[in-house]
Length: 167
Image (cartoon, rainbow, N blue to C red; front, side, top):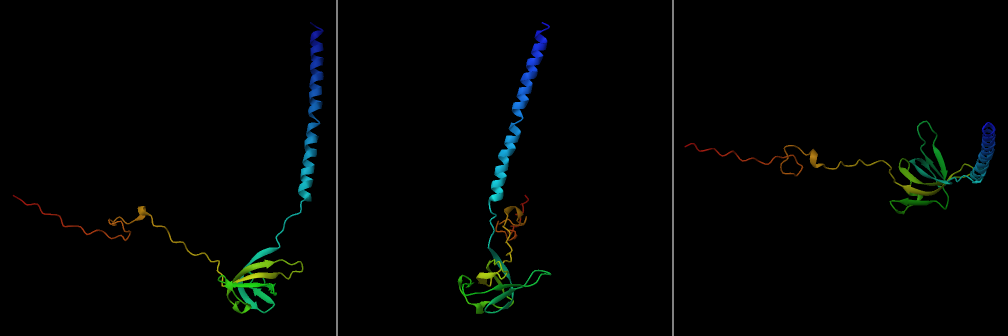
Protein backbone atom coordinates (compact mmCIF):
# COMPACT_ATOMS: atom_id res chain seq x y z
CA UNK A 1 0.00 0.00 0.00
CA UNK A 2 2.77 2.38 0.74
CA UNK A 3 4.15 2.06 -2.77
CA UNK A 4 0.80 2.44 -4.49
CA UNK A 5 0.01 5.84 -2.92
CA UNK A 6 3.19 7.57 -4.18
CA UNK A 7 2.78 5.86 -7.57
CA UNK A 8 -0.81 7.08 -7.81
CA UNK A 9 0.26 10.62 -6.90
CA UNK A 10 2.98 10.65 -9.56
CA UNK A 11 0.59 9.29 -12.23
CA UNK A 12 -1.93 12.00 -11.38
CA UNK A 13 0.81 14.64 -11.53
CA UNK A 14 1.84 13.44 -15.00
CA UNK A 15 -1.76 13.40 -16.26
CA UNK A 16 -2.41 16.85 -14.82
CA UNK A 17 0.74 18.32 -16.39
CA UNK A 18 -0.12 16.80 -19.78
CA UNK A 19 -3.63 18.20 -19.59
CA UNK A 20 -2.35 21.70 -18.81
CA UNK A 21 0.28 21.61 -21.55
CA UNK A 22 -2.29 20.34 -24.05
CA UNK A 23 -4.74 23.13 -23.18
CA UNK A 24 -2.18 25.94 -23.22
CA UNK A 25 -1.52 25.98 -27.00
CA UNK A 26 -5.22 26.36 -27.77
CA UNK A 27 -5.33 29.94 -26.50
CA UNK A 28 -2.64 31.31 -28.85
CA UNK A 29 -4.20 29.43 -31.74
CA UNK A 30 -7.49 31.17 -31.07
CA UNK A 31 -5.82 34.58 -30.98
CA UNK A 32 -3.98 33.78 -34.22
CA UNK A 33 -7.33 33.02 -35.84
CA UNK A 34 -8.63 36.39 -34.66
CA UNK A 35 -5.74 38.27 -36.27
CA UNK A 36 -6.66 37.35 -39.87
CA UNK A 37 -10.25 38.43 -39.22
CA UNK A 38 -8.99 41.78 -37.94
CA UNK A 39 -6.70 42.09 -40.98
CA UNK A 40 -9.61 41.33 -43.30
CA UNK A 41 -11.60 44.17 -41.73
CA UNK A 42 -8.64 46.53 -42.07
CA UNK A 43 -8.16 45.58 -45.73
CA UNK A 44 -11.80 46.31 -46.59
CA UNK A 45 -12.04 49.89 -47.88
CA UNK A 46 -14.45 52.15 -46.08
CA UNK A 47 -17.49 52.98 -48.18
CA UNK A 48 -18.05 56.70 -48.45
CA UNK A 49 -20.88 58.55 -50.04
CA UNK A 50 -20.01 60.97 -52.78
CA UNK A 51 -23.47 62.58 -52.75
CA UNK A 52 -25.42 64.28 -50.00
CA UNK A 53 -28.71 66.17 -49.65
CA UNK A 54 -29.12 69.91 -50.02
CA UNK A 55 -31.65 72.01 -48.16
CA UNK A 56 -31.64 75.70 -47.43
CA UNK A 57 -32.61 79.25 -48.30
CA UNK A 58 -31.18 80.81 -51.45
CA UNK A 59 -28.92 83.79 -50.74
CA UNK A 60 -27.66 84.34 -54.30
CA UNK A 61 -28.00 82.61 -57.64
CA UNK A 62 -26.11 82.96 -60.91
CA UNK A 63 -25.95 80.76 -64.00
CA UNK A 64 -22.83 79.04 -62.55
CA UNK A 65 -23.13 79.26 -58.72
CA UNK A 66 -25.89 78.77 -56.16
CA UNK A 67 -25.32 80.21 -52.67
CA UNK A 68 -27.28 78.78 -49.74
CA UNK A 69 -27.55 80.44 -46.31
CA UNK A 70 -25.22 78.83 -43.79
CA UNK A 71 -26.21 77.74 -40.32
CA UNK A 72 -25.96 79.87 -37.20
CA UNK A 73 -22.44 81.35 -37.02
CA UNK A 74 -21.46 79.49 -40.22
CA UNK A 75 -20.57 80.92 -43.63
CA UNK A 76 -22.87 80.66 -46.62
CA UNK A 77 -22.33 77.59 -48.83
CA UNK A 78 -21.58 77.86 -52.54
CA UNK A 79 -22.28 75.11 -55.07
CA UNK A 80 -21.48 74.82 -58.77
CA UNK A 81 -24.30 74.66 -61.32
CA UNK A 82 -23.48 73.05 -64.68
CA UNK A 83 -25.27 71.78 -67.78
CA UNK A 84 -26.01 68.43 -66.08
CA UNK A 85 -27.91 70.09 -63.22
CA UNK A 86 -31.64 69.37 -63.34
CA UNK A 87 -34.31 71.68 -61.93
CA UNK A 88 -37.71 70.52 -60.62
CA UNK A 89 -40.68 72.45 -59.30
CA UNK A 90 -43.50 70.36 -57.77
CA UNK A 91 -42.54 67.36 -59.89
CA UNK A 92 -42.39 69.33 -63.14
CA UNK A 93 -39.38 70.55 -65.09
CA UNK A 94 -38.12 73.98 -64.10
CA UNK A 95 -35.27 76.34 -65.03
CA UNK A 96 -32.68 78.33 -63.15
CA UNK A 97 -35.03 81.34 -63.45
CA UNK A 98 -37.38 79.55 -61.02
CA UNK A 99 -34.69 79.65 -58.31
CA UNK A 100 -35.39 82.91 -56.44
CA UNK A 101 -33.43 84.58 -53.65
CA UNK A 102 -35.14 84.06 -50.28
CA UNK A 103 -36.93 80.83 -51.30
CA UNK A 104 -36.20 77.37 -49.92
CA UNK A 105 -34.63 74.77 -52.18
CA UNK A 106 -33.64 71.17 -51.78
CA UNK A 107 -31.67 68.80 -53.92
CA UNK A 108 -28.70 66.54 -54.31
CA UNK A 109 -25.02 67.53 -54.22
CA UNK A 110 -22.04 65.59 -55.55
CA UNK A 111 -18.82 65.95 -53.56
CA UNK A 112 -15.72 67.11 -55.36
CA UNK A 113 -12.11 66.53 -54.36
CA UNK A 114 -11.30 70.14 -55.23
CA UNK A 115 -13.97 71.48 -52.87
CA UNK A 116 -16.26 72.86 -55.59
CA UNK A 117 -19.22 70.58 -54.94
CA UNK A 118 -21.61 70.46 -57.87
CA UNK A 119 -25.38 70.33 -57.84
CA UNK A 120 -26.94 67.29 -59.48
CA UNK A 121 -30.58 68.22 -58.85
CA UNK A 122 -32.42 71.24 -57.44
CA UNK A 123 -36.00 71.07 -56.16
CA UNK A 124 -37.55 74.54 -56.09
CA UNK A 125 -40.09 75.55 -53.46
CA UNK A 126 -39.58 72.71 -51.01
CA UNK A 127 -40.44 72.79 -47.34
CA UNK A 128 -39.23 70.48 -44.60
CA UNK A 129 -41.29 72.14 -41.90
CA UNK A 130 -43.43 69.62 -40.09
CA UNK A 131 -47.13 70.04 -40.49
CA UNK A 132 -48.98 69.80 -37.20
CA UNK A 133 -50.89 66.56 -36.89
CA UNK A 134 -54.52 66.75 -35.91
CA UNK A 135 -55.25 64.87 -32.71
CA UNK A 136 -57.50 61.87 -33.18
CA UNK A 137 -60.93 62.12 -31.62
CA UNK A 138 -61.21 59.82 -28.65
CA UNK A 139 -64.63 58.66 -27.49
CA UNK A 140 -63.54 58.67 -23.86
CA UNK A 141 -62.65 62.37 -24.02
CA UNK A 142 -66.10 63.55 -25.12
CA UNK A 143 -67.88 66.02 -22.94
CA UNK A 144 -70.05 64.67 -20.16
CA UNK A 145 -72.90 66.78 -21.57
CA UNK A 146 -72.63 65.05 -24.92
CA UNK A 147 -75.49 62.60 -24.90
CA UNK A 148 -76.01 62.48 -28.66
CA UNK A 149 -72.56 61.05 -29.29
CA UNK A 150 -71.80 63.54 -32.07
CA UNK A 151 -68.80 65.04 -30.25
CA UNK A 152 -70.26 68.57 -30.20
CA UNK A 153 -70.85 68.57 -26.48
CA UNK A 154 -74.50 69.55 -26.79
CA UNK A 155 -76.92 67.93 -24.44
CA UNK A 156 -80.14 66.49 -25.74
CA UNK A 157 -83.07 68.59 -24.68
CA UNK A 158 -84.77 67.08 -21.69
CA UNK A 159 -88.50 66.72 -21.40
CA UNK A 160 -90.10 68.31 -18.41
CA UNK A 161 -90.98 65.77 -15.75
CA UNK A 162 -94.61 64.77 -15.84
CA UNK A 163 -96.50 65.95 -12.78
CA UNK A 164 -98.09 63.31 -10.71
CA UNK A 165 -101.79 63.66 -10.30
CA UNK A 166 -102.86 63.77 -6.76
CA UNK A 167 -106.06 61.99 -5.95
